[in-house]
Length: 311
Length: 311
Image 1 (cartoon, rainbow over the protein chains, first blue to last red):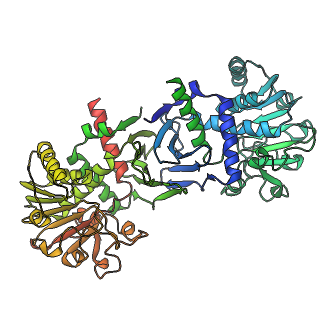
Image 2: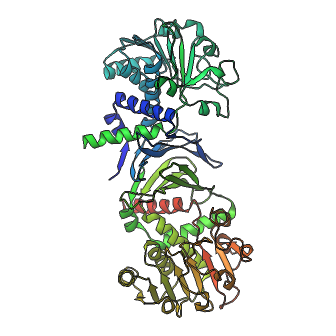
């Protein structure tokens, strides 16, 4: 029988360590050529579109499926992302996850894979800019892959950062301090998680300490970017989960057309050890998450496996 | 809240008359240019594919969505078609139908629209060749649109045709007789429903009575076709639900490349009265169902509306 799961199930069943491992295996499939991830397909109408990101990881994960979401710009309740999973050996339907949490868990886990592969192994201090769902899952994944001692969080909204600090401290059992400026947030940070909706840079490149790793999850087009343009030049290593996807945006990525563009490497090559993430402890490393197609399906499958374990 | 429905719900909730009306309205949207139905999208792997038929009917039905199914060639349980429905004004998710029955109901209803638009208004005798799910829903739709007095059914398998006759007689409250040859089946028929998996013609074009209407639902490529090649020439009017789709098959439709190809008209033009279906009572008319994309979504939406009524 197949699964029909919702955000409540995802919340209950997710183990970030397991999801990070599954995403790592997916990058290995990408490096080995067994990940199928064609460009997204859009069904376009005058009112709004449906966007499909389909993918398959056929060697190890043995899943084929897709995510679909709408682009309608309104705040109504009832917008849902759907992720459907089929067995890639047999075509049998495994189930559907309905809700918006899975996407954030997926992006968080991708960030966790990047931190595990690229941040210093002794990284202990995390700076989080942003307090939304993406900031939460990124931090959860960071804690899953490094021995985090302290987290500093900044948001322009004081209430949001206090709530974030209280809730994440409780959830992750780690010290989380709300701070009132981005400079204070970045002070002493080994890992910077930037997960905002800001179209202008939320920090200066000069504020970064040597040896820091940065994950940028929010806007990063040439027109609107949450991180400074100079960040590319400041970074020894720049990775993304799909160079093809990064270069395919209709509004170009902020690194496209800069001298840094040619230095961008694929996270999968770091995960598989083909390319080292850092030469020294003082290197600044940058991960630009674009959200490789197919990873949603792998994450949904992990949640379904956990559901079987609980049943 | 959204719906999650299965074959059991479809079986319980479907009213063929309502579905036929909804499909008619969809053809009107097609004729008026408010139906969006792009070519199907395939996610291809070495083991098998997922196929997406997406569509939107934005003016009257106000739905956007898609159907997805797999092409894996095995007989395992657990293959499912999924049809997902969203509101085309708002993007809000309305629900999903999981199962294989909806597709047959949809194809049946399309056949019903064709019979309503093209068969003689006094048609009373129906011949059915084939006893599968498609044959059942086609007959159900025929009974929904014409005052059917008698049905003759033929299949090569005697047991299948006896079961079909008994079950459909009970379900539709109309006389259904199992016969032991296609000639006997076609005798006196006003409407012929051909719904087999046969790759070779199951009847001769000469056996058809004047004034008959034919729906062909099964194979109709130039390589494998359940109806005779001469059927095109014998028919005064040939209609399909999407000429574009009919001409786009990788293995050409049996009428493509024949002198009859240019005579093919769109069912929507008959439904809207732009083109008359028949000039006289003796005209033979033919409908080649290709299954216009977007109609699955409309049918799923009708089932969901019925589910609300029952709740």
